[in-house]
Structure formats: structure tokens, C-alpha cells
Image (tube, rainbow, N blue to C red; front, side, top):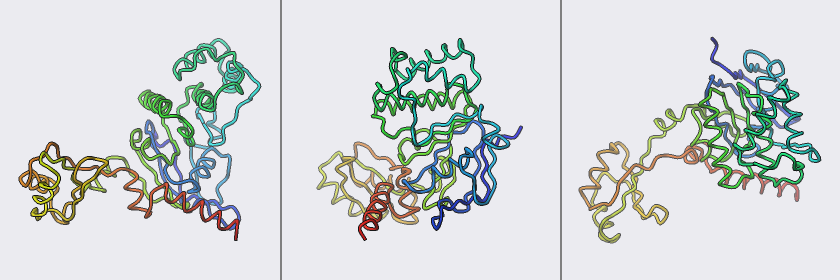
Length: 323
């Protein structure tokens, strides 16, 4: 059996003079959760729309479940970035309509609707009109619409955007459960912490180009942490003097965020040996390697955090508008 669920080969897409996607290739395996990362405007949504056959690529090839997404539409769940509800419809009627489009019987649909409304913590809203729900509740309703037919492939475009921390955690838990049931999931986000928590595979796109395509294990292996966090048992001043005499250290500084020293290990020195040297130099309450985050990886690959790049892009647009 072919385990490749999504395959892109040398895909390009332009809008006039703007090349939104440039020579992008990747594969997503069955049962994987793949995070599609990058700042706003990086080309994520354009790529997803091409995967869904909403847009056609200028060149290159796209295969979804062995063919076109149009041929496999009843096996795919899709939550687009631009949300849309029939605002005057009641919640249950809206979800029954979505279920009917997917070939689900009325009785089966009602059972699934009750179950999903409970699961996303929306009991008692079935007779409310969609427009009466809060923005977060509407977003959860649209998520239900994307999974009601139990798709083999689930594509989510910025699913966590606009949700409060409690509902982000709830949705993350449901995504994890869907993965455990065998669903293949591709979700676009610029929220690195969600991707780091959920993903088996990470695709990073910047200015229309793929800059990273690896598993989380491969990323952690390649971006080997070189920073030690050390919480002193003595005063900061005493430990500072002691650390100045450790030859395995390149630099160190006190971190108010971690309430510990951030110690950069010298090049060519094994991190475990450096940790042992630090422990010999001064008494510590704890010592650990500071694991590189996906945001750290993004900075290393494209020279800025997602937030910094988005701020710069917005500033550039404002200048262009006033130029």
C-alpha cells in the first residue's frame, strides 16, 4: 500500500509579478501530523489551496490520496483560513446540511453532531443560530464541520488563530486523538509552540520557498542545543565568580526568565562534559540543556522570529501605501 497521502513535486504559483510559491516539493506520510509553518504571507495558504484544487499550480505536480483532491473530497476534511457559516441557520441544521453533503444519513448525523458538540464543550447550542455564537464557538463549530464525516486526511489552515488558551489546549488534544485514530493531519500555523507540541513532521516555508522539511527528532538532532541552564545554590555573585574560571564555557549570563544562568558551551566541547565542569565549579539546584525551540530554528534559518518578520512585512506594506 502506498503510504504517501500528499505529494508535491516542484510546484510553482504566481499572482502577477508576485511568486507566492517557488519550486516547493514535499511528501506527507499516512498517519502523520505535519505542521506547515511560516509567517503570514509566506505562501502557506496558497499551497494549501493548491493541494485542495481550489487553485491550480502554474507548474509542478500535486497528488492527494493518489489523485486529485476533487476526486477524494469525501475523504478529506478542510478548515480554511477564511471561516464561513450560514449565519442565520441553527447549529444542528447547519451541521446536518454539512453531513448530507458528505453522504451521512440523518440518524447517523444527529448522533455524530451530539457527540462532537459535547466533545468540543458546546452542549446546549444545537438550537442557537450560528450568528448567536461567540467567535471562538463559531470556530469550534467549523472545526466540527471539517471532521464530522471522519476524513482520512484533515487539512487545517490556522486552526488555533483567535482561540483563547483553554480552547487552544482543547483543540490540540482533539488533534492528538484524531492522529491516534489514524487520521493524517496537515495544519498551517505561525504559532510555533502548537507545532512543536503536536507534530511528527515540520515544513517551514519563507517567502514562498521551503527552508525546512524534517521530523521533530531530526530537527532536535540537527540543531543540537549548546546552552546549559544552571540554577545556583549559592548567591548569583559567588556563582558568577566561579563560572568565570570554567574553560568549557564560551559565555554566560543571568536569565530572569529562567531564574538561572544561561551558559553557552564553547565550540568543540561536549555538552555533557561542560555540564560536569559547571557542576564541579559551583553548587547547583538544577542543571539542564536548553532544548532549541522551533522559534529558535526559525531564527537560525531565516534570520528573525516569526513575530519580527511579520512586523517588518506590515511596516513595509504601510510604507508602500504611504510612499
